[in-house]
Each structure stands twice: as structure tokens, then as C-alpha cells.
Amino acid sequence: MTGGSGGRRDHESDRDASTALPVPGPCASTHRALAECHRRAARGPLQPEVLCRHLNRALAECVVTACCPDETDAVRTLCGSAGTALKRQQCQRARIDLALCLEAHQEP
Image 1: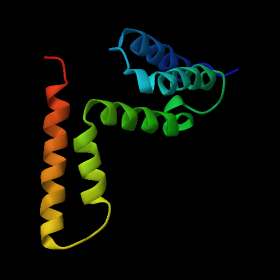
Image 2 (image 1 turned 90 degrees about the vertical axis):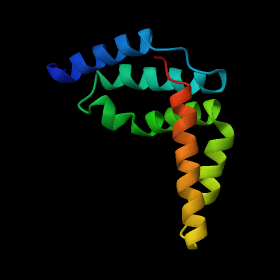
Image 3 (image 1 turned 60 degrees about the horizontal axis):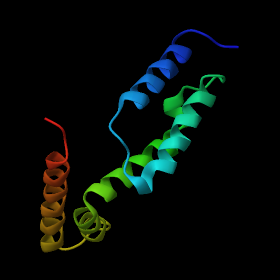
């Protein structure tokens, strides 16, 4: 059984997850899966950041999409591939709009 910082990090992650803001409904199952992954990672040699990377990314994408669906869709559509100067400009604007939307959802 491993000890040291791996176990401590998992404990901190559990505490952070339990005191975090509620996760939107469509993302709740991914949030539960990520918490379970962190618990399992505490028993193994890999750190949760490595073992649970795919779930962390999935949860982040889900929360961003739930908070700012139109802006997320615009970024996916306009920034998915290289294009003309106009498309690059539209992509940049879409990213700014998404950032502003996410900022509006942050707690002060």
C-alpha cells in the first residue's frame, strides 16, 4: 500500500469536491464518476490527476457546455479547423464570448 503525498492529495481532492459548488444536473453522473475515480486512485500507484484525466476533462466540458451552451457550440464550430482570416477572427470572437459567459457564472 502506498502512502505519502498520493494519499494526502486524494484526501484534499475529496474535501474540495465535497465543498465545491453543486454540479449541474446533466453533469452530476460524471462528477460522481470522477469522485469515485479519485477514491480508487488513492489505493494505487498513480496519482488521481493521471488516472482520472479523462473524467476530469469530460466534467469540465460538461459544466462549460451546461453553463454556456451557445458560446460552447460557437467555439466548436468556428475553431475546429484552420480556415480563412475571417474564420480565425470569428473563432477568436467566439472564444472571447465564451470566456465572458464563464466569467459571468463565477462567484465574486
